[in-house]
Image (cartoon, rainbow, N blue to C red):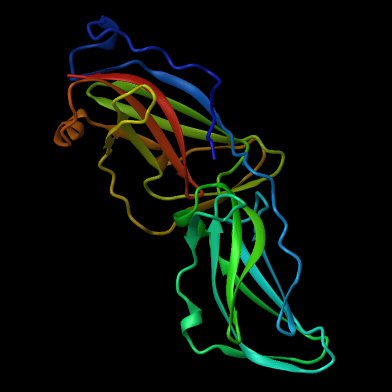
Amino acid sequence: MRTILVALAGATLLAACNDPALGPFLGFAFAPVDSTFVIDASIPGPPPETPEAERLVGSLLYHARVSPRDTSLSSPLMGLESRVTVRNPADTAVALPFALCGLEAYGDPSREDRIWRSAGSFCAQTPDTIRLAPQDSAVYASDVDAQTLAEGFVDGRYYFTVQLRAATDTLALNAGSSDVRLRVPGLAFHVVAYRSDNHLMVWVTFVNRNSVPVHVQYGTCALAVSLFRDAAYSDFAAGWSSGRLCVDIGPTQLLLEPGAWHTSLEFNGSYAPSRLVKQGVDEGRHYLSSSLEVNRRPYVFPLGAMVIW
């Protein structure tokens, strides 16, 4: 998914290193930034895909579907649900060994390059016995939780296949497509960055521009600052730590009403140049970005050039 950054109030350009406005020499020069960024959370790409129709294997019909759940903006982070329906269309009862083997995700409808596979394989275990009366059906469901989506997927559209074993047959059922989107649409981020004495100060606030409340969550070290060697922000130089202790006490969660602003201690940072020196950052011109992790997704804000000497 391509992330689009729109600056509503542009950052100022870097002043010359000997500009008196920059104050006394302290090892770095950075022009202040006071900008608002809107992040595009849309998911472009190939069109959605519906699951294949019921497939007859032996005497039973099989159908698989993957669907998103908890997709409301006010819901906790979304997950996915995989459902396999097995139906007996005959007039006689059927019993056979059956096992779900796993769920696979691909980045395009061709399903040539697998991106993700669910952990574990139940095919190696002793299968269950499915018993279906005439015209009866059974549904097997499994979930992919938000943590798995956050760690295994970037936001985007994925095409799923369910692997299963029925008697001696191993099947791969086309389960259609589903969008994965943890990023919150309709948020605007106000970023202020400036030099204070010998420190870089960064402060982020965001507002809900949606017409409905949105669920947001973040951790104790949601704010991060990074340096890059190029203006395209592709050649990473170093992460700039504030020295704040990140304690895993669970995320802060809140429901942000339409038009409401939010900031917190976790969205403020003070960064000392000495920490960059310890990381071996070279002298010269670098390019600074800050990011804020909300709902397990980083929102990245380019802040312009900074000279280190």
